[in-house]
Amino acid sequence: MLYERRLEREPVAFMRRLPEMLASARERVAAFLGADADGCAFVTKATAGVNTVLASLDLRPGDRLVCTSHAYGAVRNAMAAACERSGAVLVEVLVELPLADDDAIVAAVARAVDPGARLMVVEHVTSPTAAILPVGPVVEACRRAGVPVMVDAAHGPGMVPADVLAVAPDYWTGNLHKWVCAPKGSAILWVAPQHRERVHPLVTSHGWRQGFHEEFDWTGTHDPTPYLAAPAALDFMGALGWDRVTVHNHALAALGRATVAGALGTGRLVDDDRFGSMSLVALPAGWVRDGENALELQATLRDRHRVEVPVIWWDGRAFLRLSAQVYNAPDDYARLAAVLPSAARTART
Image (cartoon, rainbow, N blue to C red; front, side, top):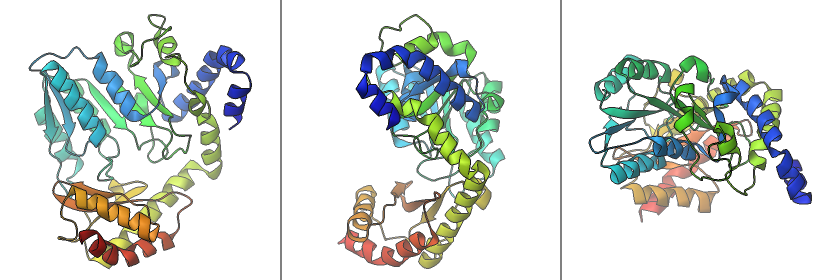
């Protein structure tokens, strides 16, 4: 709110100071992510980061884009659209549940990437299934194959440790408005040095050809305050202690899974060390018919029981993705477990 008030009080003066304010915010965020600020640019969301990188590729018929079967729907759509425009082909690496060990996941990716692949997109934390994937070994496998790789860390910052320079992908993007609790519309795109000259924002404006930061910092008039507020969010959550927050959230996500899965009688699909602040619960067979029915169950839980939880239809099965943040409590999951059977019956009728 402080930045919004300053912006509205004197917009012209605020915009004059914007480059230095963005530079300061970028330095703070880069340090938190283990990245160099020179390669960081603010974007509105991780999906925008992925779209930005896809737009920088000179795709041709027969080229391949590769993702896993756990890719976020919007990211898969962006990759499919890029293929449709160019004649490239989208290849999906099947990673089944229950989740295999790291070596099996890396081997599956390695079989799918070769010099004909122009980009591999791998999730650090999968959105539909809440699983942590071995991004470091995947990046290494892609590097050995000579294939550029992008880490989609939409759920990464604030949930799992980020060390972008150590992982050293070609591209990395992550949201700050999720687990860091920055305002909506605050995310980072990091680009390795060898790619920075040809990666440009989706909107071309006055910064064109003036440098990586100049292009991304000014894409026309918009509200930049979510970017500027990111350091304050880091300070607030950091005051709680990031280690304490992540340990607490993981333990609560595990408790939530045990509570709900125990009530439903469904087994584990992801080991304890393979998820962070989100956990996955399978719904019993027959409770949900299809993707449309999954949305109906989600709406029933929200409208009738005031429980907000994603109901995921993935690989022909229905799941709940439970989240845990410092404001949640064990009773939240107990209440969900209690109302689920009646909510599922209502959604099916």
